[in-house]
Image (cartoon, rainbow, N blue to C red; front, side):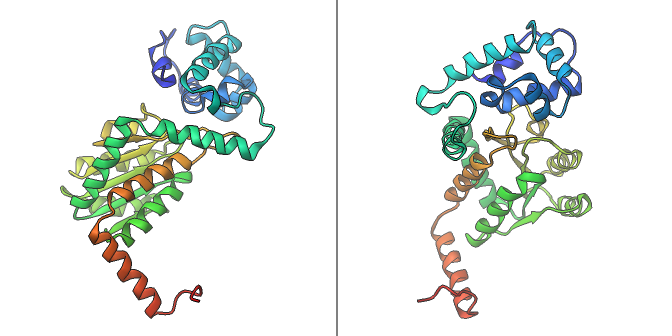
Length: 277
């Protein structure tokens, strides 16, 4: 069973507050981490105190955190093959990280995600103007999409930095344009507002995020959900980069090959590279 769907289906005792929602998001985004962690460790990941974790577990219908963790662990282990999971504390962080990234990429390759990846590539091909926005950790995959997509012949503009700069770029979007928003973990008000503004202006909106229930989904024409579970405190960006690479693969055609060749010839003419034999 999908962990996020299981959490959404629980009968909640009273409305979850913002801090309890952050606990639930940790469980949905990092089920392997949460299923072997203490309440303190989950609290640190969510940026709340331990009592908030306990209260969130009780609101979800459990006596406390240990009971919730036990059911979460059973669901997580049932959702992946035994060969893909290395339970408990990391004894070999490098190897465990690689195994976790394999699991994340496998989970990325759902029919819905593949369809959204293809649709995003088609939106890029059809758009007059293409803009990519992100914040925080999402800036890395955003750079890759913009840089390699431009080499492939598509004028993909990257708007990072200040909120005002991003707003200027989004304000220029119109019907027939395309906005691609990448979000990892915490969602800023700026990213949320600019994504909605792009939709209101008639642009096609594609969203790459780590949570299907993200508020960004409300304004997305195409939604790609990328697992970000990491072995340690920070998220893993491997699956999001893989999604970006999949979009780029859909952009690969004769025009892209010709554009790439022209750019490489320009680099050679300008003597920019120091890797010639």
